[in-house]
Picture 1 (tube, rainbow, N blue to C red):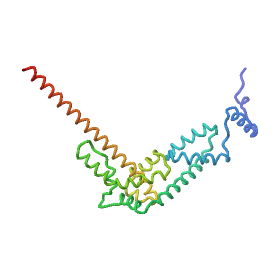
Picture 2 (cartoon, one colour):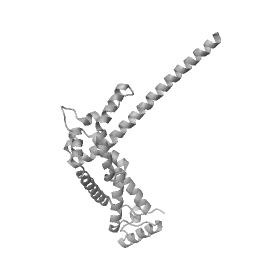
Picture 3 (cartoon, rainbow, N blue to C red):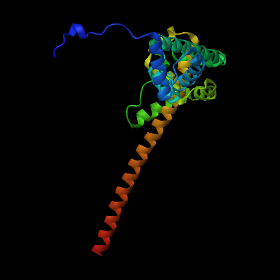
Picture 4 (cartoon, rainbow, N blue to C red):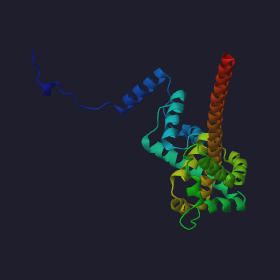
Length: 245
């Protein structure tokens, strides 16, 4: 039997009480808790830990998803997430700025000196140049750059732990000094300049050491190969001499 679509069209709405009951039953069935204001402090505490491990917003958000999933808590609204992240990012920025502002004044001046414009070329521009190859010229330049920031690195190394950041976070803040032009860095607040340069020098010096070790291994391997070829040639020469006698 044919029924017209008009006669079969449903109308009305689900009662609010019924909707609430159904949602509560589904959450209970799967062992989940609905997000509420009472969970805000716990979530903020977790976000403050996550942001020190994963300072990039998208990484922090992904880790927050995992945390809420493990805790079996429904994800809050988009607006709530925005408010939580805005609060936590500001809190973390204020925390880091307070720490770097308490650094010795001579260290701050040294960090600022690196991004200071000097005849169109900054020390930062020179330090950021990667080692071209394994030639002795490139090796000498890498050594010269590492010697130039060695003392500064020692100071940075003693202060990095006070930031209470993961290695990943230290690399991230240092990478901003790597990406930004010196002129852009100089426009940042002093505390932000110091933070980025502190992490940059710490990471860059270690990269210099890694490059020097790699270069040493390259030349050592080449030396060993050349020595082996020479010894093999001498051995064959000796054997031929015995056969001729």
